[in-house]
Length: 298
Image 1 (tube, rainbow, N blue to C red):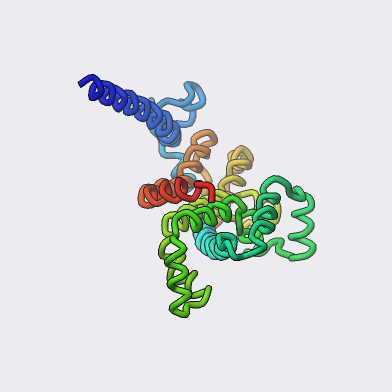
Image 2: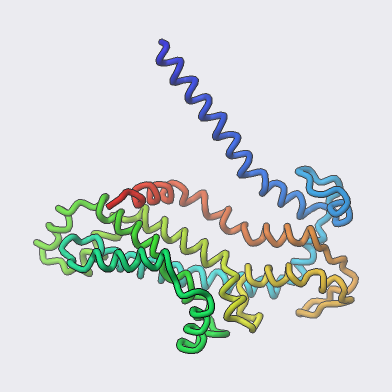
């Protein structure tokens, strides 16, 4: 009976702690939504509140007036995220497969090389020179796809660990006895059994591509190639300048519309985070499973 009471007390304490942590995690999103619909002068005078004292949708009206440009940036971000994530998953899973094979004699050397790149790199200046002077990706879609996010050393090691610890070698040996090639084993055995870790690295890569604005800042000067986060970051940085203009012309006449500043920042953040909030609940269980199993030392 005493053991049962202790277990019940432990579960209650865990539930209370998790509830507090959940509230702490959700509170910033609630505050962000509240601030984005708060009247500008009230927001400046009284600060952020969880319950807006005076509601105004000026921030969203401003963004809606620029819907054509924002829509183009959204479409570009979706394209870059989908293509970049697919490329990242293919390259990472292919690279991790031979590293998980104990009969591959160079596996330790490649693993060390990957780990080394996680600790050291040439720096931003060297990267910029290589990408712009050798690969000539400036002001092209490749500038949003190739630098920084195409492959992650941490993801490679995590996938390798998953292959080593979660896929029985007997299955691979049976496939080889049946005459399957390594590519057939990878496609028909490895990938179907690696769904959790594949989803995990896809989420990591997708989040990186979706949230990226630094590649655009370094390699893009044509604003038509701005993704949503790069565009909204640029808009936020220049919003005070925009408030001093009597009219803005991006296919819309905004003269007479009061341009918000503080509220617009919150509306911008809300627009940027919305797709992540929608997608995450559907892949949460697979993500957790992939991180836990892939993090086991192989």
